[in-house]
Image 1 (cartoon, rainbow, N blue to C red):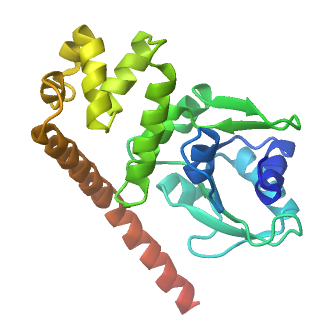
Image 2: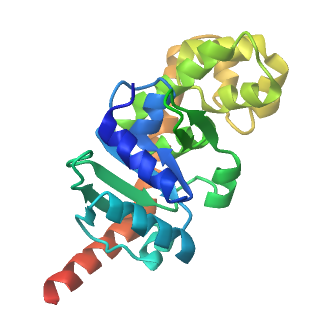
Length: 250
């Protein structure tokens, strides 16, 4: 059963018709790759009408901004996240992080079209990032995200390998991070593997079976993505520092 504070947040979002997609740890819980997450991370459509609806939902939750930047459309469009803390009796202390842009992830309208919808036992509907989009969003510089990415992919592969389709096979071959499972995917789908080797060169190693070289190639791939994420966030961090300093000077 979903914990009541999280349900209260999601219920308010739904009640006010906010275009928002659950992501982060809570989405990983729904996909079966995590057991618990304290925060609620939302990707939202950054337009005036949707922010107005979100504002009403946040007022219902008695949620206040807890850090820079302030809750403004321009900051969300820059790619900054806005952080809130709930004071509602049914969600005390629940943190909500909201953003509209992510590195390597499609625009919100595309994410919305690809979303996964689930219905809780009590009838509440929840919209999540699709699994492929969640995997892309979790590929960051943070240490804690990579084990989650691996578990998401492992679970999807193990649950669906007896029912492959071209879309799933492509997803597995381009994203799997567990050497043994990647080798299995290459062995079971050799034609797709050959086609995708130019896109992901380490598939040439995976075709040959498990090896130390494949393990190192996966590690090098991760290091490259982490560095890309650091470069992406460097100017955004500088922007946050600028906003902090401006706030102190007032």
